[in-house]
Length: 126
Image (cartoon, rainbow, N blue to C red; front, side):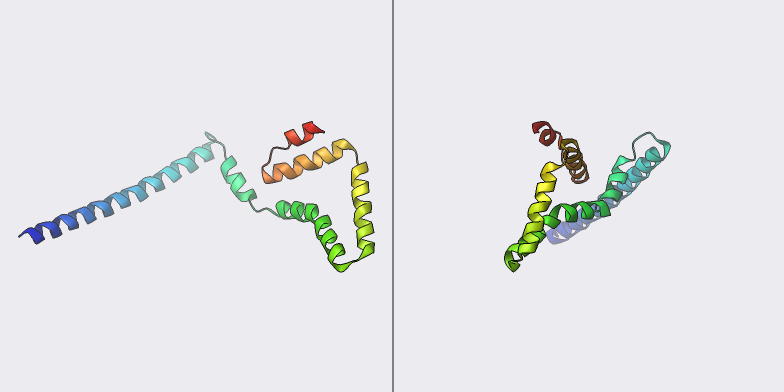
C-alpha cells in the first residue's frame, strides 16, 4: 500500500509543479503585455528598447576600427619592417598631438558614449 501512496504523492507534486510553471509563464506574458502597453501610452520610457536596438550598431564597429587602425598599421610596420609605414604612423601621432584639445576631448567623449564609458574624468584631467 505504501508504494502506491508515494506514487500518488509524486504524481500530485508533479502536477502541481507543472501547474505552477504554466501560471508563471502566463504571469510573465501578462507582465510583458502590461509593460508594452505602458510604453505605448508613454507612462514609462522606451529607452530600454532603444538601447537594445543600438546594441551592436555599425557605429560601434566604425569607432573600434578607426581607433584600432593605427595599432594594426604599427604592428604591421614592425613585423614587416616597413619603414615607410612606420614614418607615416609617427607623422599620424605627431599630427594627433597637434590637434586642438577640445577636438580630442570631443572624440574621447563620443567613443566613450558609444561604449558606455564615462569620459568626463579623462577630459577633466587634461
